[in-house]
Image (cartoon, rainbow, N blue to C red; front, side, top):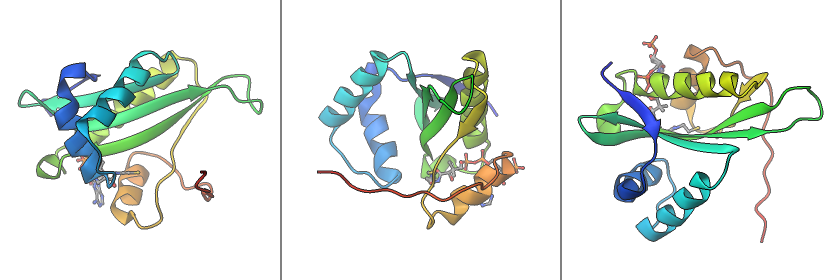
Length: 143
Ligand SMILES: CC(C)(COP(=O)(O)OP(=O)(O)OC[C@H]1O[C@@H](n2cnc3c(N)ncnc32)[C@H](O)[C@@H]1OP(=O)(O)O)[C@@H](O)C(=O)NCCC(=O)NCCS
């Protein structure tokens, strides 16, 4: 596929807000701008987009953290979404492949993610990409 995976640019908050809304988290462009800024200030976190036809049509986050269980750090994927009009063209696969390559460059020994039980499509997608279902996610909203 003719897709470019690159870091998010501050001038594309509108496209990002649309993607984040499609993922199920509608929000303002101001809020997205603030969050993107925090990513850019962090060494441990990366936010990448998939560019096709000159626009950001996919999004993925990567978070590197230390683990006491392992000698090497681990990588967590987040916020993976491909614009509805661009699904099924290998864009999601390209985003995850680039994040996996980044995790390897950073010396991570594991890449993982959590996904909601209801997202059956996403579960098939991750399995297809070689991820195994190994656990269960527990979450508690704070505040
Ligand atoms: C899940 C999602 C990111 C996949 O992106 P995509 O660009 O459509 O996926 P790709 O075209 O790269 O597909 C890669 C592989 O996964 C498989 N796959 C993708 N979507 C699938 C689905 N809905 N059902 C079954 N398999 C699927 C494809 O068959 C493909 O395998 P192949 O290359 O061997 O044919 C995208 O559908 C999406 O944004 N969904 C809504 C948001 C979401 O649920 N995100 C995950 C949050 S945890």
